[in-house]
Image 1: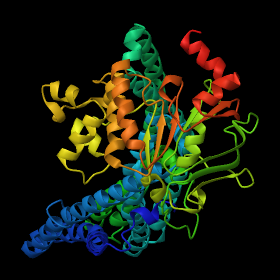
Image 2: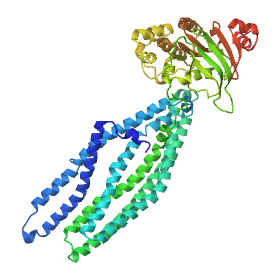
Image 3: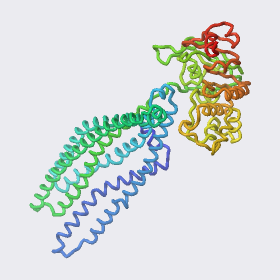
Length: 579
């Protein structure tokens, strides 16, 4: 089973002890399942003869009471429940942690193709997997043992005909459940798929509340969500109806089995070949094995349903990251900060190349600007440097200080880079915690210094709660300019050798931009910097400007050199300058 390594306590001694307690309780309960009906039969026989013998079965009643007390929730059932709850918590923690860690290790191609709601729902299925393990090992297996013991023991108490009735009833009962389950599983799958789509719509609408409000589409989203809920709840009702019909059919089969065995037992008693207590024993024990059979059918249906729910978690755990550390890779050691792209070609879709044979070198301490029209491939170069995607073998190489980024660990690579994205996102935590996220051991004073350098300290100080202010989901309470300046503060706090700026000043006013440019001037000293920019005025002082158009570098040089060429850069500059 794929999930077993995650939920079986191979190394956790404490959980192994609780597992042992659970198994011991199950074994004891199997003995009690036989002993309690047997003792009740003994009491019945003793009471039947009490008028003649004058004997009242105090001792037998006491033994029965002890067995009953041990079996109920105050005895071994309580012990097993306590053990099972701890095993369940352990299994859920292991599975959900494994799923979370796996999701975070997956590459950008996965995250850009899956909805967040779908991924979250898959991670939540960890509890279903534990339920499957609990059902199969601690419920279904003991039930099967009970059935075998029932057939053997009742055949010894009565005869082989009684065993035949029990076996035949069990076979017909299980067969009916299996056949019905084929139909039920399909209903469950339809319902689960509808529920998944409903969760996607719900998550999208809630997370994009502002967009919904901008366009006054609240009624539309309500109707869309209502329609999908109506659809999958109707399927849910059909699933429940199918389950109820199946359960009713199986209960009818069990009733016929009990009727046949009771007639046989009554005939034996009437013939004088069996005492009256055997009828009480049979009825009591039949109720005992009826519950396992009834629960076994439910278990089969429930397990099938849980497996359907867990399919997405299984798919998630079996999805390999497209970018991962190769065996034997080493740590990246940044000495000078020299970055090179050598004959790099790349495509998100093989039918449409994004980059074509790009070669460039950023010398240590140099600022390289990437400019051009939207969709030319500028941001893709940064993603390749970050290894959000890998350059395929034979399509060139990206290197830092002569080390191919594919030959170093992802952790060491990304620890060496500082990034200000075009669309920064913050956690729904305090401003202090959000900025400190770039370097977790930073002091409060260091965070404030980074914010001053990013020209955002005064804004933060004006908030009622200052640096303790919570920013809302993805920073929704802040303006676009404030978000970008906090992202810049993160990089300033991290203080990396290599800095990547992807439209880092696109959402700030001219006065703030000037202050940020001054901060970048201080930051760029002794550091290699890549700047993706549409606003050309922000990169006029770059050491090297590359004009990227349709996946190729069509021009390169300084601001003055490119203007003198009167080519693509000159055209872009003229449009922005109004020339």
